[in-house]
Image (cartoon, rainbow, N blue to C red; front, side):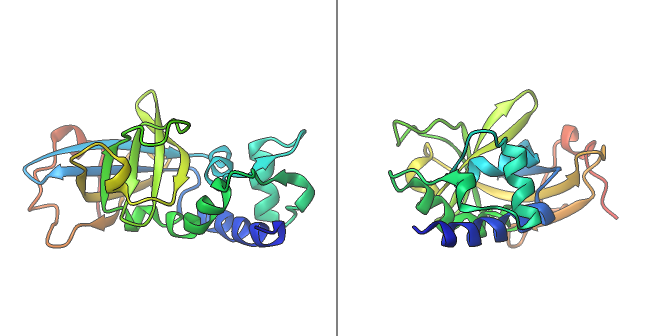
Length: 201
């Protein structure tokens, strides 16, 4: 992949990350509607670089890299593209993953299908997924994968029922971004521990 093409995709995705995910928490409710499970995720500016698959050059932090993307200052001399093809695969699905809060259909635990990849939880669909690692009560994004989640997650994967979003600074989730077809807050038995985190207008 030419660096010019990579820059075009990365800059475009950074702008979408800024709008949709930066400094946001997502709460995923998944599994059986009568006994759902849940996790919370956090998306910070420094996490964006990990999703691109490229490596920033010396002297550039992950936050600097993201800032340059948003300001349109990212240059070919700011990063390198690994020769193993992983960056190309990540960048191919990155635009889709910038709307994870609306298009994640399944969640599963990573099945260690790729020996060099470390991640813990996967959220996505049949064409792409995002990997997360746990840090305290939250899961942080650490990779993007051009994979069918059913092929790399431990079986069975679980259906995403609902996805809620809030700014990190807010205490309560006030946006319902996604609900699986035929489901609403009445048809799902939302655990009390989750209800206490949600306020919907």
